[in-house]
Length: 207
Image (tube, rainbow, N blue to C red; front, side):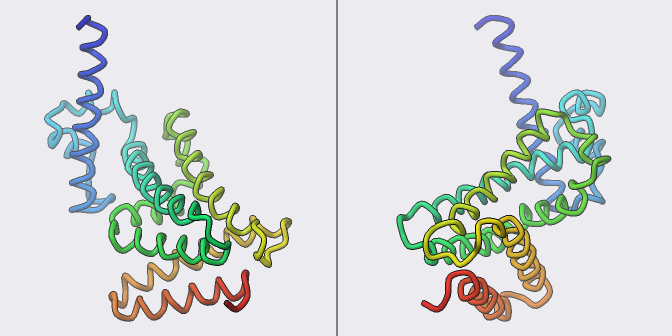
């Protein structure tokens, strides 16, 4: 193996070690309480070396957001590519979203955090352009799947209203999950089923 190949392999290994260390610390202590020096120490790197890979804590946190989006996109694609009627696809997409939030709550926390932090121009300026592009691609992929479902025959959503409907439904589903965090799983199931029913009846009619 040549020198260039060895360096690239080492770079990938260090990057993976940083992400593993950051994931563990963020999951245990949260975003605010975790510092870059702590992540560097956990990854057995000098703090200066860490910044060669990730220029800010926001950039590192967003990399984990991309991981979370990949999991969510996979769930939504599986739900939407069943060949079932649009109403059934929407139902399984909503179920997949709620399952993602319950089974991987740490990734959901990142999604919710970045909805508030990541939308600002000053926040995105701390990220590398390549990372912003990958983040936007994942966000677009989630919306594209939902848009596909809402645009199929059987949907009551006018084409010109699809984007607004997507934003409204997303906000409602996120709110249901935040409610779950306050009330626990028993109450959440009832509220989640009711929210899903409202979406399905409103945009697809009674079954």
